[in-house]
Image (tube, rainbow, N blue to C red; front, top):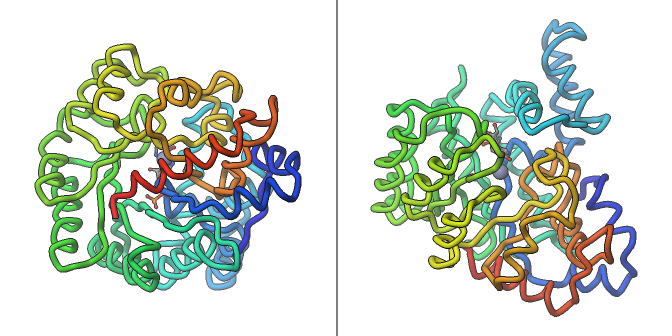
Length: 345
Ligand code: IMP
Ligand code: ZN
């Protein structure tokens, strides 16, 4: 299932010739940073919304109606915090086990199906969510059932921990990830995500330690905005993450740690541009990591609101400036290899 792309990734892709597109499409690529509920193809979400309105008496001011209209028209964000307002509408549609499975199938198909799939391997991530119809454990099991329909070499699941979670819920979620892994289910890691301004990171230490003891990979959204303090960033680095999401605003000390440990940075170009945490491609921190020959993985983050695809994100690497970074095919191939090398699975 292909979804329409728009914005910077689409412009970069449109600037490439057929042989360049064939080159990036043919590269074995790993998508390591894709949030399930942020990656549902809009066509699938529209179908779910249609059924939601057919079976309920919701008005046009309903949260789902407002959210779907925004997503259809193309989301324009003034700042990153506006982004999190989109999720209540999506969550209202994926709160039943049937719709959660359906959404998961559509996301997996979007990345993995077709004659030239977006990626060779997908590490999908999602936050265990309790709803009136399912427990957190049932949520994760439902997602895993769909993930495991693909071979082990193609898909795996990361359990996301939200920055707002209480110590009790964090414990519950890590325990879900751990016990499912012990049972041979395909959970390969845990993630820290959510509103970058929320939560107190002091409470997270023991939960990441527990995940590490269970043999789970650790990836953390870190230094995503200027309001994430240096102290918080250093604290998160002390949890010994295997990979980092964004890492946009690392100070020199943090950069030294990340470089010394060769911690892979998951780079989401369109996400950063549209959330306005990076003003333009030329200012993007990917340039720093490329200069240092530091491991990175190119990822989409949330294909739904950012209207991108993994092919589009790779187009941003290869397209000539200012539409892209103007890298050579050799450099792009090396980046794809680094992504594949950073898999947890
Ligand atoms: P879910 O975990 O499958 O429900 O995917 C949506 C969730 O991912 C959102 O509610 C956020 O918590 C998280 N998320 C998506 N994009 C970002 C991001 O760029 N930064 C932090 N959290 C994010
Ligand atoms: Zn993310």
